[in-house]
Image: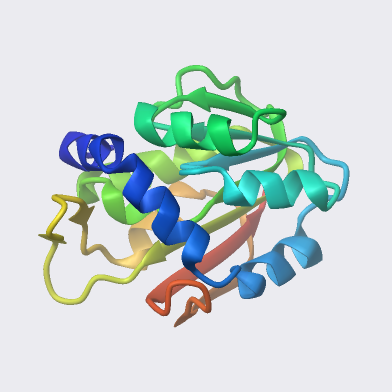
Length: 196
């Protein structure tokens, strides 16, 4: 994970948490999770931010733990959802998570915050923490032409989706498409993969 991005999320955590709370709910993503995730299955939200999606997962039959690289965002998540579990871990290593630990893994708009050369390794690790038969939902904001940083210093990396697919090895791809995220209004690439 890009260190400058982690720092931006930590120092601006309350502002980002408020911004995400004010956005419309990502019903398009939630519809896909209800369709493809295993209900009752152990679930991880990698890059959980302020915890909104961890709360939704737990409320809808997907017992979930949230992981994030930013201490500031984790503090926001814990304050907003004190009964839920949040832990610190960082892509691509995810050192605290064992292989084949989860039935469902969500990684919503996180990959674009990694240097492009780490994307394939991060996807391989996300796939590694899935149990056989488990499902991975990945999305990232599509960056046109060249990697850049926003005013807060967050990295938005430009990379080809082939880097993501390469990391997923023998996964069965259930969805692989670009669309506009109904919550943020940004163009995203969504990929749903199942481990054989």
